[in-house]
Image 1: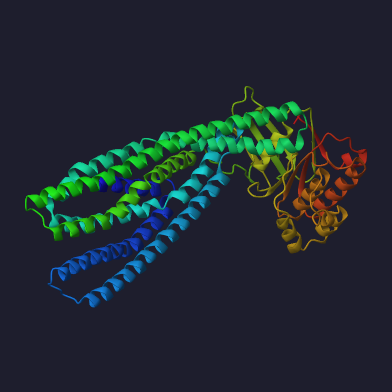
Image 2: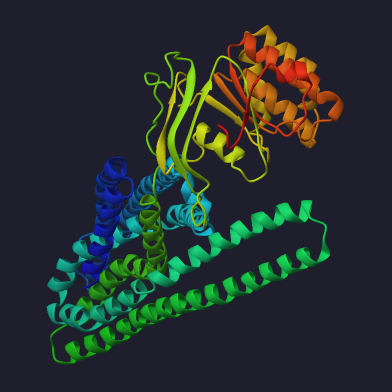
Length: 539
């Protein structure tokens, strides 16, 4: 029964390798097993050799020594040293496998996250699933070692079962007919706690998202009422996490302790059964010592395997969450084209029959939307708030996806669009420094100097206007041919806006980059004439 449970655990891991990380993890799994099995077998053989040493010691006590006492002592020291070496080797293999798989799972998570459809992030439920998947990747890495402990327990049983049956088949039969089924039943109860484990993972991910939002609001929102309500809500969720986590942990702990207690009671019943066998002449003192020694040698890994069953349950729950994460929709393939255009002139960006609505929204933002912009001249997009200007730029940039429609462009849109958002979040500054160091463009360097970017990135902290200047220099230093700007000058001082925009347009023109600007600013007539002006709703 216990072997069946361990084998089921191994099979579930194998299924995981096929379903979640497919061929790559499957190869790593089998490679780890093939490397681990011989060493684990040697470790079990070392335990068997120690059992033989105990038998030799019994012969010495009975006056029928095969070795002298000193020779026996030297041999046992050598066997113990070999056992230590084999177990250390085995541990090295399992730990390398564990951390390698943990790295692979996290890499897979990051790759999947990058390719998720933007619609996943439209709702709190989608955000929660992503956070839960991250939590699961961490849980899997910290609990995946139970796989090798289960393998070792199975091997130890396979090595010692013949020995146990040879020493006393009635006692072994009693052990596996009466005791092991009870332990197996306890382990199945642990497996049934899977949904509760998955619920805890989801609760933790929800809390992480709320905590992140609270951290931002506590720095940007001064109203006492909202700050207090957010704090109270977070504390309530902390208490819920405490109560739910405590309940699940206690249930797991109690079941694990009961399993271990049953194992200890099993030893008591085994000894009582041994006394019965000895009284009936079915076993002698030597057989009792050997049998108890054999049981103890195989009992430790079996006990450890039973003790880590809660960890196994956590790992399997994490796998279940990751499987659900894998089913989330991915980004659609790039639908841009350089062949079809809206006029004989090929220098156009065209959107045809575009439909778009945010997930969970009651209204459609774009319905049968079409536009045709010439890419040889910058475009200035205006329009009232809420008309969809920012969303349109995100759709062109590939940060959102049309429900229906196509973007046809003479400029390749795949990995070739630089989008500067209103709520600007900058990547690590060393990436910009690397771009500026690699650029051969004098125009980019001159713009960065004129915008004081070199001084801005050299100091700690940036204002909103400084972040905008850095983002503009970043866009010019990138290899993108299309730059989309969503009100980038809103935080820039009024006196600097036109000068900065003029310098940016001059540099973009030199670099053959097409610019689309969304802005509510009133530009001078001379500057506005550099744009094709589009009013949203009339596009």
